[in-house]
Image 1 (cartoon, helix red, strand yellow):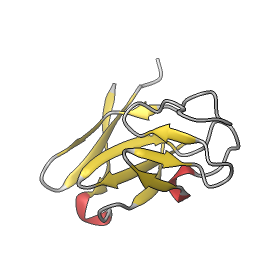
Image 2 (spheres, rainbow, N blue to C red):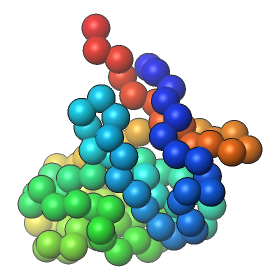
Image 3 (tube, rainbow, N blue to C red):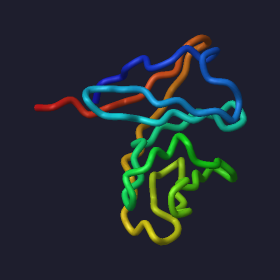
Image 4 (cartoon, helix red, strand yellow):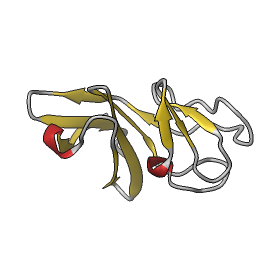
Length: 105
């Protein structure tokens, strides 16, 4: 696993999200009441940007068809999505947000 700095904490307001590119992957980073989550940005059902979806109760709703994903696990919670998305472990220090990504062998 590799720990990568992705954003400054001040760059992501409360209840906001941003898409970042890490190793050719688009990853959505969410600030939910001061807790940070990172998942693949593309919905597993419709390839829509999850960072554009509505966030509530640590879930994000895909803006295309309403599929919900758990921000803590990436699990698909409602149809039409049946497959989850990759979830990345996040950590912070006093200024920065980091995610852990697998390094290619």
